[in-house]
Image (cartoon, rainbow, N blue to C red; front, side, top):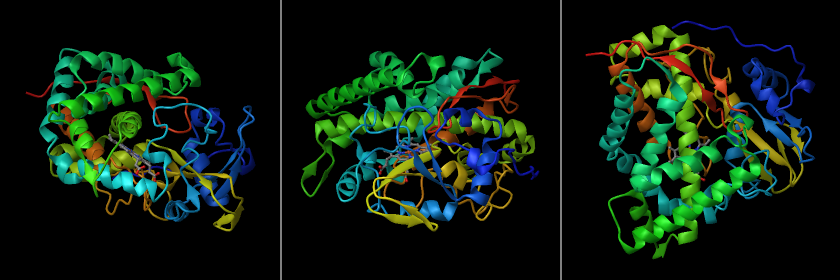
Length: 415
Ligand code: HEM
């Protein structure tokens, strides 16, 4: 295991603004979070130009857990991104992530069994087949854009396969997903309005698919969701539409981010790749956890205070936005020894990239881990020397730690 120096920044705490997207393009981002953890565990951040209300940033691991544990005080109903004022349509609009208990609990009980570790384990062969198809399409290439050619088609393809989106519709869904993904990153030609419209179209497609499966069930996840009942209750077509939108958004951006930052990490810490190659299957579970911690794909989740309260001694007023920063908690020195070292053998590894201790803990965590595990074991089996040839070109966002592009070389093919 090699160590890495703790990151630093020249900015003073008062000059750090997590509401400004420019902050997330800075090379010292990790240093900014470290400084906040050390000097200002709960701090106020004002949106620069938009006139929107600012938010409190909670950056220490234990404080994040405390906020997550108390959904009665820290609600999701007003939206989960700091940039949102509840004013714009989006793919996950009206879905379970924007509900609080007990409404949320009812829905979670309905959909939970479909995403349990046992249900997801049955999807292994289907996922491996999708990964193999993508790898086959790369054979003969050497230089690739790892994000475009591997990390993006994989989670989307898996999602469409699992939900039962017919092959002839997948191109159109991909285009829509592209428009929502980059949440207004100008390089993708999107603005927030366009993102919202694409989100609504995705939801409409989800409703259509649910109706098809109601009439004629097949062997796919949408058919199980349509049939799911608890205490005689079913999921409504509207709920299935918003759930479909949430799954597409929550499941694709995040897995793509993990796979991409994983390659950057294996390039920066080549001894960790060599270590994994010695026992690909045996070390896969640990390595996957560390890849996900390292990427911390969903940088924050926002809640809204339902009453006057306090976090770590900081007074917070009813109605204030409160953002918990998993991207900071995952590098909290009080929980992770040598947090800036990428270590596939890290044990324990209480990474909080999927959330921690709250009712919204990622529903897709088992599926995500399976996808990333199969993606990497198959990739390394075929291309054991694959490496990144440049830095990750980052998406302009303070929500998803998204890669825009990552140049890579596959290296010689095994066998
Ligand atoms: C590495 C990949 C992933 C990461 C890092 C991730 C992260 C997260 C986080 C941070 C939350 C919110 C936790 C909270 O508020 O406390 C969440 C919720 C959720 N995720 Fe994931 N996610 C990933 C993959 C997936 C996948 C593959 C799916 C399904 C296709 C999925 C579906 C969901 C859903 C439905 C929720 C809402 C759960 C609820 O409200 O109860 N996620 N995820």
